[in-house]
Image (tube, rainbow, N blue to C red; front, side, top):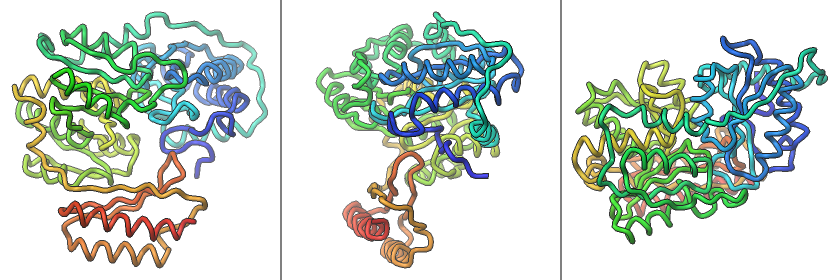
Length: 445
């Protein structure tokens, strides 16, 4: 059964446009409360966390009212990274956790995503049940719920992050620049890395409700790259607005994306931690990443884009490591979902153990040139049956002659189709991507 509101990463859209409105959130809270209460072992409570968008206050209040109306107690976490909500949902033995965030998008957007009592994202069947409940008439429970603020939420999560490191691990002598994207990690990441002994310089840790992800964070790391070089720091780390993505910058100011970070973690596990059983990437993962893992004899599999699909395939294969080139990295040996801070610590564990600068370690993997162009849609078109698009894809693949890949993928969160071409020759890849994107644009508009 298809879902009406939930996409690949919850419900997301422009604030003020349905369904990202206060009245919808009120009813969503009620519907979620009706479906989720008493479903998992634990106390009849649902946690709510949010990033730093100004609209988060409004939606927090609306969701809280709906949940209380359904007879569910509410625990308010305040600004909290998405993976922090997942962790606290588990440790409080809550029925579920709700995150108010639009991740790496600008402040004009917002969204909602749910975690079950086990700290994993809700399965499709529960999201469908919530949507079905939304069609009903809202009623008031015989026994109303209550709300309370969890005062020590951030401290609990800081201690959890540090506790994922081996005994004796420290970052003394390392200078790290942190870009917190004016988002949910602004008051947590600095404490984690400082308390582990690093000397840190912070960027974008002054959220004002409208500056989240603005020219900063994992999707726009240019300021971080400049600052690392300017200060002569060992490396830089950038998170996105809700803290589930991470990218690095080495001491030369060069960006290190999710594929490279996954490779570094996998190489560390292979060499120093008893082996790496396998890695799950996505359709967007660089082919050079796959070749690098092959040299290590580490199995690799591709899932659909979206961390829920990565985690699903990890479970199916019994593997503990997976992620996306955007910086969503899941280390299921220590946590249940993509976590930017946890992933960063795993990379730093690899760097300190290997005893080499990050710049040198990353050279063990060679990325193939990859160009991706976002083509905006004004109407929905089935590209898989469009003759002109199919002919253009075949022509592009013929020109690559087996040395690269072509991928067309509609975004799950934006009105765009992602056109990706990958190959050995950077100039050829760029030209082929532009030609293919022009054909796709003509078909879509």
